[in-house]
Image 1 (tube, protein in one colour):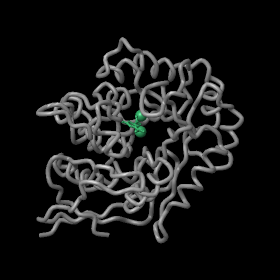
Image 2 (cartoon, rainbow, N blue to C red):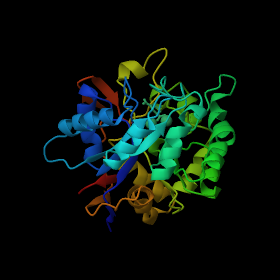
Image 3 (tube, rainbow, N blue to C red):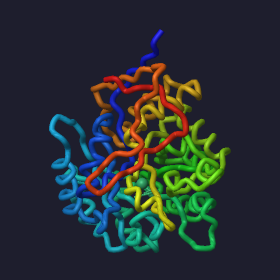
Image 4 (cartoon, rainbow, N blue to C red):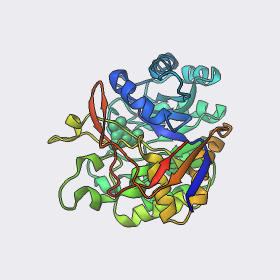
Length: 347
Ligand code: OTD
Ligand code: ZN
Ligand code: ZN
């Protein structure tokens, strides 16, 4: 008997689309399967003001191929000079869905991020008042802290104190990679949620480092040991509405990944749904995929789930995933889960 799975059309609650030729190349990969995505603001220069977000949204819509239906949900990049009044106006205009906090230096293009949270307190107070969520890259950047511990230390030294200080602030802890992050989001009081990427469900640090270094698995936060990967899989497949999909699909051209100092980022937009169906089937939780990919995210952001659907079918033949997609900026390698995928998106 053929196995089929029909879901509400999914959304991606954490996505990097870039700009220019790269944007044109990667946008169809997401729009083919996803109805909406929260678009990260870490361009160079970053998307800081409401005007920046409007202009970027217009560039995304202009790059969308005819016949594709996709809504970008815009974010503002929080800086120490962000004006609370501009954030308030962008929210009132329906222009932005969230504000993004990058600790300075935490990841790709985060140099203009926040060094001192005290300097953005006015913005955060405004956000708590108007109900605008803060999406957080949850890693400390203190040089002394080991890169594998940066998420755990962030929870204790930054996130928990911040949430005690501003209990009404809605927070999304992005791309959780540790059991500590999972436990925090599952148990903490107040309005908190967390996104989990496709690749962190499928790889741990051994995949990246054993038998040769695999630059296309290098991303931030870096993949942790397998016990953490298993905690992510349990959370994603638990049905807990605090957890939902944010792929963090982050394209870089191969030349920037396959080099002595390679960029961080995994590009998974092309095959994410086939990967997720694989993981959820392995965890005997196919019935929970719709919650993770299509229902919990809209509920958290106060939006209706999509009415359109998407159908996957399990076939004996593998899904023909291209090794790379060609973009005007250069080739971009697609996430390789390390084995064939059999869940085809058929409609
Ligand atoms: N992680 N790469 C990028 C962003 C993310 O932390 C992230 O959200 C990127 O290239 O923009 C990455 O590894
Ligand atoms: Zn991040
Ligand atoms: Zn990201």
